[in-house]
Amino acid sequence: MSISQLDAFRGGDKLVRIVGHRGARGLMPENTLIGFEWTLSMGIEALEFDVLLTKDEVPVIVHNHHLTASTTRQPDGQWLPDLEPAIAQLTYEEICAYDVGGIDSNSEYGMRFPEQMFLSNIKVPRLADLLRLITQPRFSRAVLMLEIKSDPHATDPKLTRTRTVEKVVQDVRNTGLSHRTILHSFDWEILAECQRIAPDIPTSFLTQLPENDDHVGEDSSSNFGKHLQNAASIPDLVAQAGGQLWCPYIKDLAAKDIERAHQLGLLVITWTANDINDIENAIDLGVDGIVSDYPGRVQHALLSRGYAWMPKPLENQEEFPRFPGAAAL
Image (tube, rainbow, N blue to C red; front, top):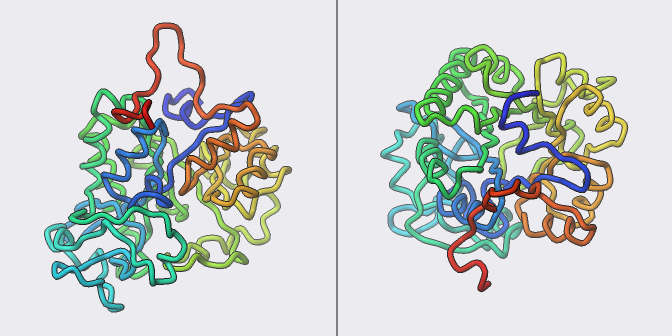
């Protein structure tokens, strides 16, 4: 556990880390540079986001394996029709023709996030764009929980996994940010490739038991949980697979599993906690960190207990830079 980026996800006495989910999806357009910059500028050090490869093998930050109708506008400003093109079938240049700065408030997905800002002229970012953003001195403490998605429609899944991991790791290494990145996935075969190709970068194992309902408007991850259904101890499986972090779904949290994970030396970061009762329960159970679309809700829950989400700065160490003018907000 000597790898430096793990410390940014490590909890402690009255310390629970906060991870901004897709930036801060509840408030800002998800998986966008402006959303990431806003979240970091408000003092959230860790980001969780999703990466896929385009047709021309450019790693881009997108959650679903297709452009999503409820969050994508065409060049004429109209919402994308239901026939949603696959990311793997579009070049990066073709993807740049679309605007992902808003959410359709009349869609089922949009109804989940009525407070999200509506922006225009926002493009799907490349992974390299976000990596360059956090090389700025003001974001020198930012860390990335980089989720690599598994393409269910790949004609050669093994080759696709390998090429995706290779391209992602290449981008991370090109910006010198291996020490600030964690590789993260539901697909444990992808994580095995991560360990083979980049043994110096920690791996984070996402889990969701298959009995949970899928989330409206999002690609399902339930297929990846089938092997966990009758497992005696999921943390033991994660440790045996070489993971350093275990990331269980918020509805699957159990005290005995968190205790066991900590006994095994795993950090426990739960996703995605938006409801205040879920947030409070996660804190009670002793997780190391909480992934949320609403980082502010987690902040207030922690503050009400006298907890923090960042350790106190060392002597002569500056606090995390904030958005210009934040003191006046």
